[in-house]
Every structure is written in structure tokens, then in C-alpha cells.
Image (cartoon, rainbow, N blue to C red; front, side, top):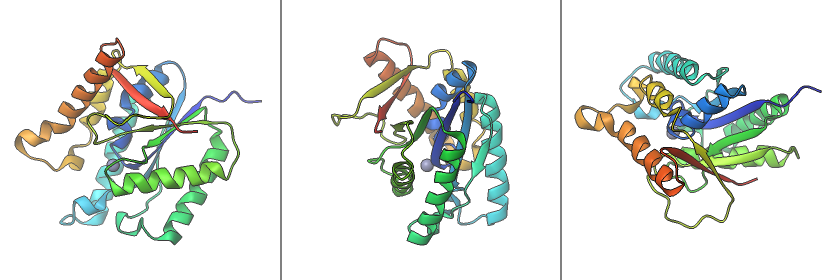
Length: 220
Ligand SMILES: [Zn+2]
């Protein structure tokens, strides 16, 4: 039997995989695991003034570049449009696709969005991934990450996974630089994502006796 060595990341937008578990993915890649990233949507709603195909090409290119930096083994886009993601038909289609991917790789671990993430599309991705997983009866650990909550004050009932990212934090910030089209901020706000991942990494590190850390919660 083939050894299971795939880590699957399933997220809403290209850049979520870096903002959330980027340091952890880079670390796992250095340890010889295969990182596969699945991205639901190209986030076209955030750029209504651009033509769709231009955004698509740019975002695919950015995601592939970032994937190389963290040592990933490829990015797959499900091409669900953000405006359609609430439709149950589209959700069913995405769920089937996720089931197929999980069955194909039989991953060691899956990382996806937290159910209480502030972004509605992140929440939907969490729901679809869990539905797909629960229909399969595979033994895979599923962990969630937050994107926009800087701190999590709420008490979590799920077991915690703390990963020391002190040595791979550089790769995380370098990979984040690939997503220039994504942030759409100007001036000082352009630095917000870097500021956010640094504060978060330091805060989690301080809480767990490390320099920089990423924290996940095991929900399955
Ligand atoms: Zn996102």
C-alpha cells in the first residue's frame, strides 16, 4: 500500500492557504509531505471593475507562484464563482468534487476554514468540506484555521494543534507577497496582511513558548 503523505488544504480564495496555515504547510513540505491546495473561488467579487478573465489568469499565476515558495505540489481551482456559492446546486457540485479529491489522495490531514470565520464564503467552504468528509468514512484528521480573527478569545472545545513556524515564517511572508492583486489596498493598508500574520504568529508563539506559531483546531 502506498504510504499516505498528502496534506490537503481546502480554502475559499487564493491567499487563504498562505494567510492561514502558510508556515505550517512550508514546514510539512520541508519534512517531505506533499501539499495539495484546493481553491474554491477566484474572489471575483472583490474586483468588480476588472474583466473576469484577466483576474482569473492573474490569480492562478499568483497562487502557483506562492505554492512554489512554500514547496507545495500544485493548486487546483474549483472555479466556483463567489456570486454562485450560495446556490445549493453549485454547493452539491463542489461537494462531489471535494469527495473525489479526498478519496483520491486519502490525505493524512486536511486543513480548512473555521466554522466561525467572519467571511461568509469561508463558512460555506467549512460546511461543504465537512459534508463531503462525513459521507466518506475515511480516517483523516481535519483542522481549521482562522483568517481574519486576529485573536481567538472564545474558548475552543476542540483539541488544539500548535505548529512552530519560527523557521518557515519567512516563506509565509514571501509567499504572501505573490498576491499583489488580491489585497487591493493602497498606502499603509497594503501592509495590513503582513502586520496581521506577524501579530498572530507572535501572539500564538508567546502563548505556546515559541517564537512564532500557527494554531489549528481538530474538528474531526
Ligand atoms: Zn478568503
